[in-house]
Length: 108
Image (cartoon, rainbow, N blue to C red):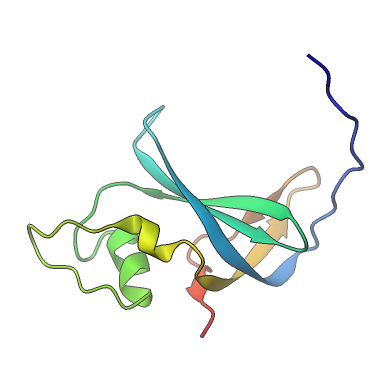
């Protein structure tokens, strides 16, 4: 297997605009739904929320921002968010950039 050495990408702290390009689920160590956001000509960051879905959970409140109406017993197709524009804030800890919790909003 061969790998190509790439230049380090510096992600500045502050406000960014991007597009949700992928939605992933992970179960280790906890159940999380990750929204992969692409911005700055190809940079990607994940915004993760606990997968538990009810009307006032973090995931539920996030989905409602995009106009989804949540009813008990209803199944939600998360892939409908792929391609949606978002704004968000980042913080840099010196080595890695992270999306600030609660900062991802629809770009409308």
